Length: 443
Image (cartoon, rainbow, N blue to C red; front, side, top):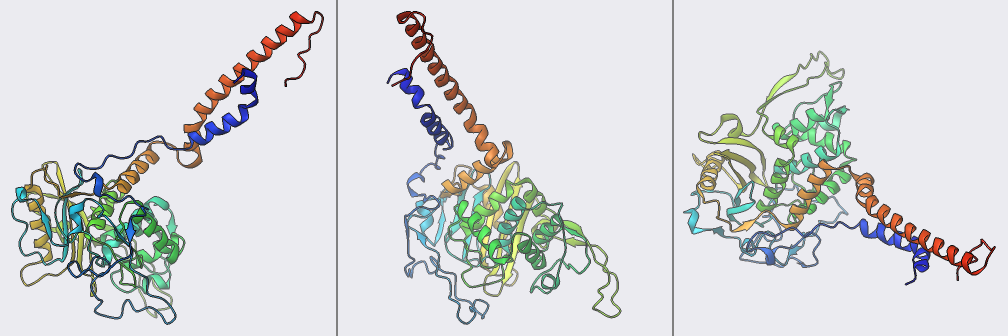
């Protein structure tokens, strides 16, 4: 190609450079050893319509509801089950619904009443042992960890908010908001995680754009983390048609939360002074409702466990979900994450004590033990993106900073080449036609 043709092509080359510069030049995240061929990235076409599986009865849908909480309104349609990935996310072994463990870690904890559970190393993402990791169960209030993640990403914690009658009329646990109370988003997210306030969940849903928009954001966040068993059907975790998650997904979501400093701080809060509100005008003789010291509903955190530091967790319960829990603890620098789903306290075998046995098993297991990984490609990408977002400008500014230097270099080089052509042709014309200082037109 002649140099003057390069000059003609300058606009097209610059445009091509800008398009190329907008494509991330990052290498694919490395899969955990032994799991590279068994992980399905988010959005992969390798998904199938759920088929009945008697050996794993909860592969596609949670256990049958025991009440009418998931009955849809007349004229509405019950949501179809989420597609089941063709290969289990996190590793081939996670496709089983029985106990999956490595003999090197010893016998798994005894007398666990949960139908689905998981024990993992929080930092490495190695799954140490699990039962029905991709079994679909109802999350109850553990889904509030997903709502908190979305709220912390989208909302200003210092923004003031008001409560309305729908908030303080919510079913279930509540922080106790009232008319005229002065609250911030920080108060509301704290109340959501500390005492599982459904009134707080309702406020956050309104601040995030409404009920439907909030669910869309929660489900998009879950998908971005590779939590493909998860569908939030209510922001609070109250049972609703189509609601589901799994031990694997709750572990991935909570692990993502613990990488957020604000989430990690709030979920480890033992007590918090929650604002009060003035006497209600619609209640004759009502008195002032002063601020009060709320206490975390996580007994592991409040009571403590000898020999370990509880980093935080989230409890849940509904009649259909039964007891659920996700949380993490630390000992000697090692952090263990556990998930319990669809279980109960039975006699003296409390859910609290079952959790302690799961933590002890995790801490005792060799660090090399791994039957699967929480580091699926989507979760790794989400973590990388979050890290880059904190370190560099966001949105169009970040894109411009990445593309601009390359574009400028190309423009400068090509412009220099064009000027050189112009100078050479001008010199030749002057040499061949004495007295003529024009260059003529290029053909």
